[in-house]
Amino acid sequence: MILYVNGDSHTAAAEAVNVHAFAMDDGNLFHMGRAPHPANLAVSWGKMLANTLKTGFHCGAESASSNTRILRTTQEWLANTPVNQDLLVIIQWSTWEREEWQDEDGNYFQVNASGIDDVPASLQQRYKDFVINVDWNECTQRWHDKIWKFHKELEKQGIKHIFFNGNSDFSKITDQKDWGTSYIGPYDPNQTFNSLIRAQGIDTVAPNSWHFGRNGHSYFHRFMLQYIINNKFI
Image (cartoon, rainbow, N blue to C red; front, side):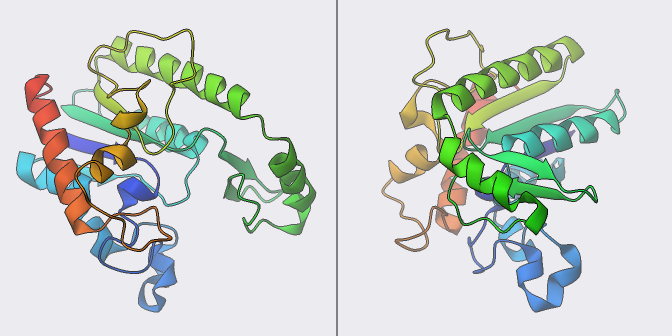
């Protein structure tokens, strides 16, 4: 069995035991680019879960990732994986407004509405307009519909999958869907990764951080393991 996980910094375990989010922020690991820092990945909920289940493991997560990148890279990985593989795909979805852009050279950039993203000169005006005009309701509805479509595609292919939200949720969506056990509390703000861990009295690594340390990932690994067992994913 192979456990495939994808998401943003919550799945990349940014800052969990090392202050860096991206491997390239560590001078000795610059060649690894925006991949998770290996010290953090080693204590991530996904890696702990793979160790417990004794499965193969592949992590496609990247800090600051948009859902566009998460969906694109997951589909690419699945397209290059033999169809006879026993797979469990777990996806942590990021905030709904994030986008993935390409410059004239085909380089990918992940942007959010913070107004502080670093983009090339050719994209700077587009980014300013994006920050000013972002429509949160439209973004939320659009990603709800896209994820539902992806869910149905995976169902059709017979690929076991579990989705959950990082920080954002779909509580404002009126046309709620029946996801079965494939989505953990999509419409419940108390069922996001952030909310579930904070409910255990576990704080982030710093007051100004959204990221949890080893203890937060250890808890979520146990939570996910129980969910998998209870719902017969293995």
